[in-house]
Length: 65
Image: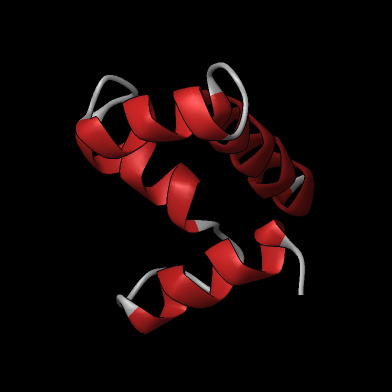
């Protein structure tokens, strides 16, 4: 199981959308400077939550078009 799938599963367990990752949800709700996003910035990649949020919004716009 990769990190993307794990993040999506965690998001669904916490009541989030099916097509959204936990990282994108945290960035959307609390901003990219919350503690979770800061930890992800250090552990995974710089600005990880912001990147996930931008990718999710791009996929969401693509579905609407």
